[in-house]
Amino acid sequence: MNAPSVRLASIAAPAAPALLRVVGLRKSYATPQGPLPVLTGVSLSLAPGDTLALMGESGSGKSTLLHLIGALDHADDGEIFIDGVETARLGETARAALRRETIGVVFQQFNLIASLTVAENLAFQARLAGRYDPLWQARLAARLGLEPLLARYPEQLSGGQQQRVAVGRALAARPRLLLADEPTGNLDETTGDAVLGLTLELVAETGCGFLMATHSARLAARLSRQVLLEAGTLAPA
Image (tube, rainbow, N blue to C red):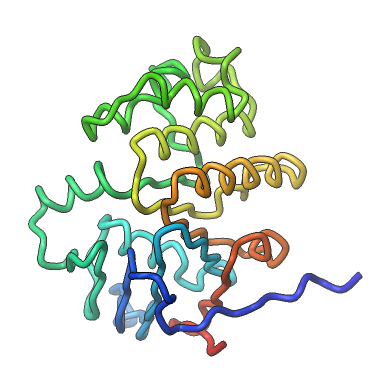
């Protein structure tokens, strides 16, 4: 059976105003043998409501790029604009506020808080952002099939259930930009497909931009655009 074809996105900005704009991003890491270049000039744009799959093999720099966009690390060179604000110009307090209020992140390892119930995990990011909305949280719990699980703790959940909680937690604060790093990597194919389907439905409902790192061409094809990170930069369309 042939693998699904992958449509590479144009590096040019989408027609709608850019929510996210990355220009000439570079990042290296120090090693005993000298600097190891990971990103060597990455540029991309994402509009509100747009969904973009960031493809590439393990070690290609996908996680590094997401961490830089998510204001979790600093680039060596280049620019990242979110809603027109260049994140490199922000101090640590402002960067923390950006992470709380504008960006939602879904990790491959779930990163739920073991001492909190499902309901408390769902509310965690929204409370930090000052946007806790019990009605929106109830809708998320219903859409994600979490209503019977709200009093449970993460260790009492399956992997798919934990990932649905992670998606709900990220969306509970109504972020403008949702980042997901191999969000189905620890799930079987059927569960992973279901989690991604729910995520895409909720992204469409909220109108946030969605950037997902994945090595799966099949999953990438479900998003509206695809780019390939290779040798530290994005492959041409």
